[in-house]
Image (cartoon, rainbow, N blue to C red; front, side, top):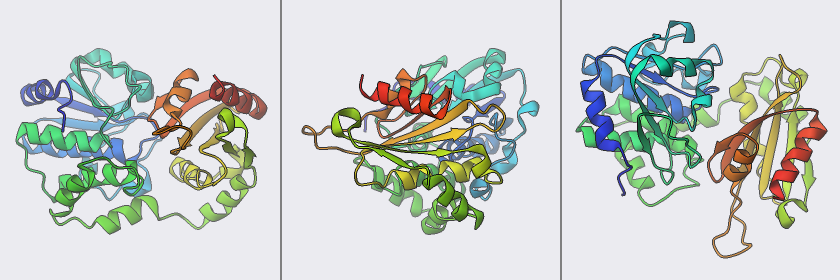
Length: 331
């Protein structure tokens, strides 16, 4: 496996650090949290003061609260304004840090560890491999370079990001299953980790899902006939649901056989004309090896992400949002 640029340099910086802040992206998923907690566990065992945080929401998503190392998570207001080393995990740009982006200025050095192809390399040290299946897989490489053993606690955090970012191993690369086997060999319960993260919802999620899916529309001619399916998660329809539960809707919408591109527009309850948009795509046999790169589409609209999973934020009416997406898909 090709070593990402900056890996050895990042290890040297971590070894020399007197204090470390690990920042995850806003609306955190299991890849960013798993990466952050795994690093915090390793640093803490080496006696290095470490904090882990994310700007929003106010609490760690329920599905991730059983991961080891959550005791290192602090509220955004409690994150040090000055620190020896700041590490951003699974963040394609400084903007993904939200309100905590201001902590970058107070760090003597910064490391970015990420696998998004749209990464802006905003760290002084950048460990970025767009070919990696998850940021937690990069963390495993980092620990190997550091000669840090991966025990069951660290493995649980790493597996959380691996299983979610690969869609339960539907999107893999050579070496993915080997890493999974290595992590499982520590004694972690892979089935329970996957169930907690991906197959466990409150009862109210079912009625919320039905309301959002009722808004679904199909545009078969989008992107030269590849097809777009989209739905709207209006604020009044998702109240009482966590962002984690609302975000999961895209994985249902994307199953439509008639469209290779899926989108869910999620309305802000504080700013009704603000929408966060989740995009997904799948392989399409237009040409040999062709697929729809939603990261390119999201980047045109001010966001970013992966080839098959990306997102952005937009403003306007529902019709405005759909029109902007269709225009970007046709460019």
